[in-house]
Length: 111
Image 1 (cartoon, helix red, strand yellow):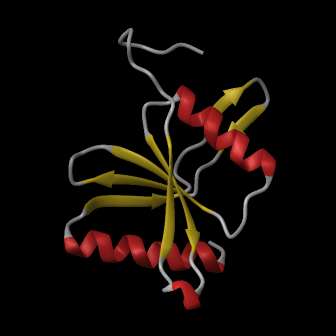
Image 2: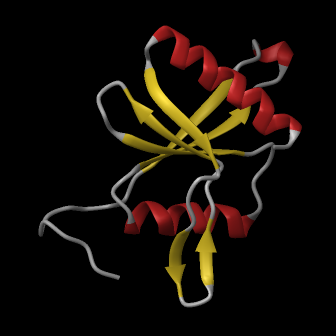
Image 3: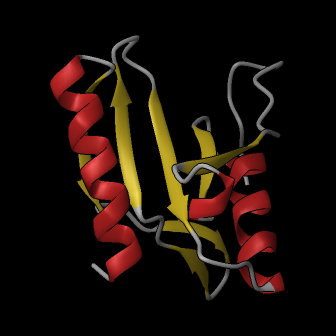
């Protein structure tokens, strides 16, 4: 883990202790987006509602990373959340951004 990911893991530990989440892991999966293109999210989180969330931590966004998370959100039935640290003068903490896109209208989703 880099320093930013370590900071975010501390937040996840706090959520775990408070019962807001049930489990988390660092880089436990690799998602195939297309031929020769994959995405390894920073964290996989199990909420107290038994839903899986993908949490991505970024100090700043590069265009390719934003495209990958948008594509992943359109292909996989997880909630995708990006966390960016807020400046101390802005109160600190994390800015969370939700990426939506997966649609389960047909009961399954094929690539």
